[in-house]
Length: 151
Image (cartoon, rainbow, N blue to C red):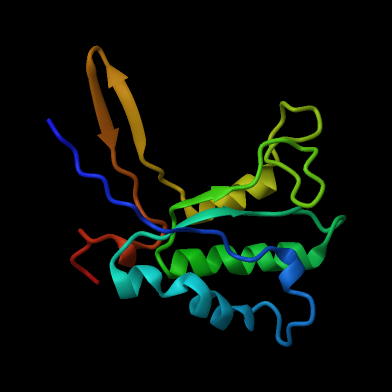
């Protein structure tokens, strides 16, 4: 059996170094996100998977980074862009931190809760015996579900 392969764009939005100097931050970034990549899925019909985003998520490191991430997560849900990657697992990443605390065991609960708002119901691939099954996920925003008749 042959499978078709479709190549889709994978984009990485600008990080926190790009929000310095914005007036009316973070809402002023909405037009930048839209201009640079937010239009892709609606305009082309091709998937847009964000290729990493995140940062320190505590007021000790940078309040502005938390504000940026909160607004970015909200934008992703509004735009139905829940396909994404977060950066990164390890806690030693100086500019972003990780999803694990410095003991490499405990989770960064606040950061993971934010990511959960964007993708609360991911798809799962699992195997039973010789068969693989896909359990489709659900969107955080019901209007994004193509099967939702109440759009």
